[in-house]
Length: 136
Image (tube, rainbow, N blue to C red):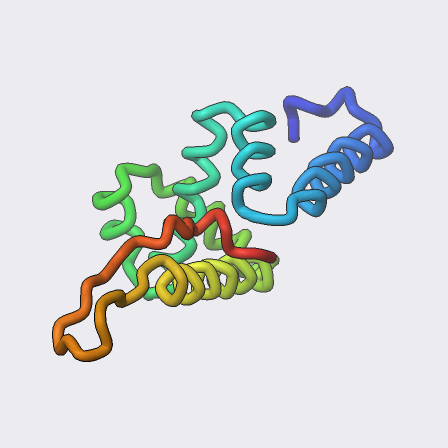
C-alpha cells in the first residue's frame, strides 16, 4: 500500500466498493470474464490466478520449495499467500467451492449421450454448454 499512501480512507473504500459492485453485478461466468478482461491487465489476471494456484498447493500441503520450483515464484510470494490464507480462510474456501460447483455442473451439462435406445453404444455429443454458462 506504500504506492497509494496519498489516498484517503474514503478513496480506498470507494475504489474497493466499485470493484465489489462490478463483480456482484455479473450474473454468470461470461459477464465475470468481461469484467475481468475490461478492468484487469493480462499481468494482473495471471498474478491473481497464480496466487489462487499457490493457495491450492499450500492447502494440499506442498512444501514451499515444491511450489517455488513448479510455479517459478519467489518464496516471499508464497509466504504472502500463506498469510492471506490464514487471515481470510473463507476466501479460498469460497473459491474452491465455486470451482467444484462449476466443474460438477459443467460435467453434467456439457455432454449428452445420444442415439437410438436400442443401440448398446451411445454417441457422446458436446452440447455447447461452457463453464462460463454456470449460473451463480
